[in-house]
Image: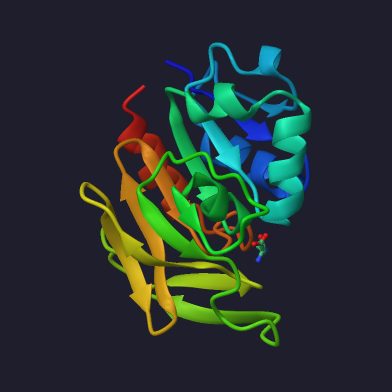
Amino acid sequence: MGVKVGVLALQGDVAEHILAFREALADRPGSTVTAVRHVEDLPGLDALAMPGGESTTISRLIGKNGLYEPLAGFEGGVFATCAGMVLLADRVDDPRVRTLSLIPMHVARNAFGRQVDSRETFLNVAGLTEPFRAVFIRAPAATDVGSGVEVLARIPEGIVAVRHGRHMAFAFHPELGGDLRLHRMFLENLRV
Ligand code: GLN
C-alpha cells in the first residue's frame, strides 16, 4: 500500500525533502509526495516532512497560513529536520518561535554557536549499524527531553536525533547526501 507524504513548503529546503522521500518510496507503488502550503493540503496524509530553514520565518508563515492548529493536531508521523526540529519542540529558547509541541523537549536554536556555519560528522544513531554522515547547518539541539522521547543520537552540543511515537526529529539534514536509512526507519515506524 502506498504512503502519502506531505512536505511543508513555506520556506527552507523543500525540494530536497520531496526528492529524498520520492526516492525512499520508489518501491512502494501508489505513494505520493506533495507540497503542503494550506490547510486543504493536509487531509489524507500519513506523514509530513518539516524542512530546515529559518524557524522564526517558518513559524510566522504557519500562523499567516492558518496552519498552526492543523499542524499541532496532525495525526500522522512528522519527519523534522533542523528548523523543523525547533518547531516540533514544546519549549524553545526564542520567543519568536511558536512551537507545535508535538515532541516534549527543550530545543536551543543555535546550539553550535552562531559562528559555526556548518559541520559534518559521522554520527552513531541508535538503530543503524553503520555511522550516518550528518550535515549540521546552523543547527539546533535538544537540551532535555520529556518522557516517552527516545534519544537516537547525542553529541557534546546536545541531543541531535529523537523519536517520539510516529515522529522523528533531527538537528542535521538526512535529506541531503543520498543516505536514506533514516527515511526508511521513519517509514517503517509509521506502519502504513
Ligand atoms: N538555526 C536555524 C533556526 O533555528 C535552523 C537552521 C537550519 O534549518 N539549517 O531556524
